Image (cartoon, rainbow, N blue to C red; front, side, top):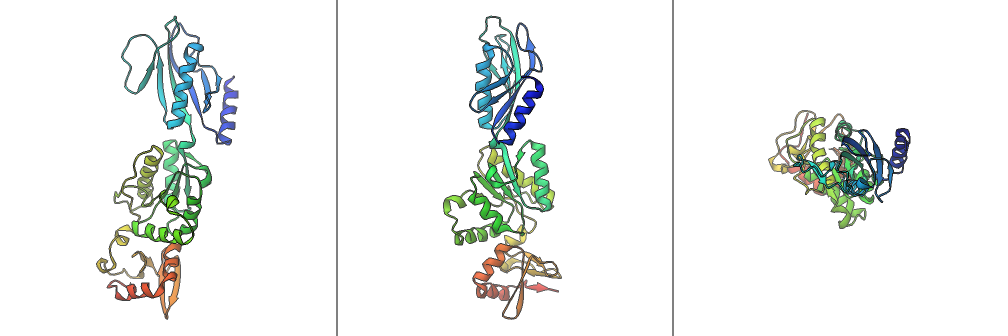
Amino acid sequence: MTSQELLQLAQALSERDEPYAMVTVVRVAPPSSAYVGAQAIVRADGALSGWVGGGCAKEVVIAAARESIDSGESKLLRITNDGAIADEGVERHAMACASNGTIELFIQPYSTRLSLCVVGDTPAADDARYFARRLGIRLVDAPGMAAVVLIATQGSGDAEALESALASPARHVLMIASARKAEKLRELMRTRGIDEARLARLQAPAGPDAGAKTPGEIALVAMTGVLAALRGRAASDGVRDDAASVAAAPASAQSAAAPGTFINPVCGMAVSTVTPMHVETYEGEKYYFCCDGCLATFRGNPAKYALIHRNSPSRIAS
């Protein structure tokens, strides 16, 4: 196949969301029928299109490419009998041909295991997409197409986004949220019929607690959780969102509300009374909420949260 035909095949496979690996010859020591720059595409079923050397290398290349597709990780491959010690990070295989040439190849997988859907129109969501592109993680538009979903709605449509992600076949669902907010959303999901098996896929907070504050910092820490999920590593402690230090503390330990803010009695977050996400009136008093989930929780038992508000030393400042 020509280079143009290989590119067209790669594009077609990507559009069908079909995993494959691009194999490129990066070094040759003669005698060998391969040449530097030769390329081939190996599909998940082992079908090879293109040219990276004769039968002496073909089966080794196909096996290595399929492993790379499965793991989602690139690799350098060296096929030789030269007896030299392989460099660190280079996978070495014996050359089957009597000619004893040497071929080195770079294998780059394009795998569904490295697909991510970032949900949300927030600055943190935009930054997470930027980091994903820099890391070579393939971004897809819908949770149903992704191995991992990162929810970065941060108060705008949280419940709907989480419900959709948990209903998808994604292996992991991560959410930028405080632990308290996440637990409230889990309770809400249960009322909507989401079973425990699906809820177990939720990791929130999304990454380790690194004291992140700005959208970029929050996105960066969340992406460490995404990378761990893609690489099959155990989840770590989550990242606090920009209000987590308030949300994580009990109401009795929270400091007084800053001017123009209201302490949300559901999650403990300080909410602006000028630009709140939701406002609810109960027994003649206004309550301000940071997200859909907190509003729904409040409506489920307003007397309980009104009492928490009345007993909180922080309450509201104007």
